[in-house]
Each structure stands twice: as structure tokens, then as C-alpha cells.
Length: 276
Image (tube, rainbow, N blue to C red; front, top):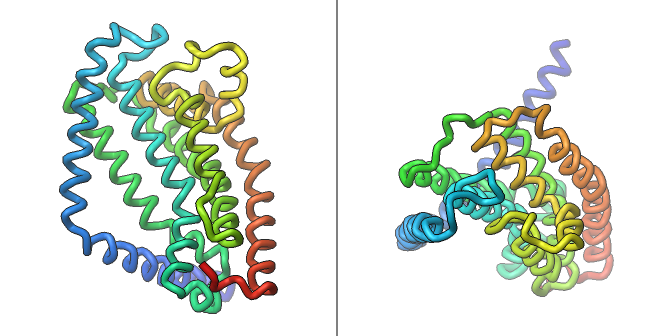
């Protein structure tokens, strides 16, 4: 029992060391632009204020369930985080291509998948911090989280991020092969804004658009997150949303990984890995 445990501990330390190196690299890069932090803080305050005053002219409730301000705020915060999960993988690939180090990085003792995961750590942590600030700031504007079910919210959150990350891996493959802007991000991001229920409930859409919306993970993510944080819905009560996200993830993740590794092999054999 001692040997396997020792090997597992060494592997964990090795993983943590690599993750820390990538995280600190991206943190130092971000910290070198300190003025942007002030601008982003001002943007968060302006967004919260705009949503608060906008909610004053939207009536007492949305779809008979939620007050406008928390509905809008949670939609914005969750969509912002999922958008980061969508583009951070391709951003890591393009950044390494543009500075000419992707061949060196992928030639290091890490797998291509590890490179994607490590490159996404800082953007995802930063986006989580921003989303937390939005939600905590919302409580200062009167949003109540007294009934929230944190465990249910975490389950929805993890599945949602994983579902969007699977599309993000496909996006990274597109960037790796074609070296240009990724239509997957534009398509998926645009459909999420239109059909995801970010700013308005799905009930206002025509019937066929509601059916299309149910194919997008963000619609289930937002429905589950709002129910968990604002109504205290349990994991059992969120079963349909959890199942939908899990099915989407089970279908897309294997395909994404297979396509990504195929893209890596094609780029290496064609000699285009270092091109940008």
C-alpha cells in the first residue's frame, strides 16, 4: 500500500508544480497591466448599477418567479464565466503560437491535454473571482441569498463549466489547425446570448426557439443556478438540469478530446505546429 500511495503523492506534487508554474506565469502577465484592474472594478460597479436601475422599470417579477435584478445579475455572472471556459483553451493555444513557443511547450514533459488544462487555470480562476464579486456586490444592492443551496449550486456550476470546456477544447483544435478566429466561439457564444435565458426568461421565446434553447447547456445551467441560489432547490429537485448537463458533457467531451489529439498529430506531421 505504501508504494502506490507514494507514487500517487509524487504525481500529485508534480501536477501541482506544473499547475503553479503556469498559473504564476499568467498572473504575472496580468499584474503587469495594473490599470486594467481599476477599469474592471469600475466596470463591475457600473454593470451592477445599470442592472439595478434597469430592474426598476421591468416590473415586479420575471416569469412570475424571480425579481428582475437577481435574474439579470446571475445570468450575466454565469454567462461571463461560461464564456471564459469557452475561449480560454483556444486563447492559450493562440498565445503560445503568436510568441513562437508552442513547439517548445508541447515538446516539454507535459501532455497536450495538460498544456490546455494548465493554460486555462488562471483565466478560470480570474473569471470565478469576477463572478463572485458580481454576486457579492449584488447583495449590496438588495439581492438575497438567504435561501441558497450551496451544494446544489456547486454541482450545477461544475457540470456547466465542464460542458463548456468540452466545446472550448474543440475551439482550441480549430485555433491549432487554422490559426484564425474560431467560428465555434462566435456561434456558441451568440446562441447563448440569444437562447440561453441570460437577460430574459425562455418563456418569452416562440415555441420552436424554446426547444432549440434546451439543446444548449447554458439554458440548463442558468435555470439550475437561479433555482439553487435564489430558491434553495436541492440536488434532487435539479435532477433534470443535472441530467441534461451530464448528458451533454458525456456526448461532447470524448469527441472533443479525440478531435484535439487528432489535430495535434496532424499539426506535427504536416509541420504546421509552429505556424501562426
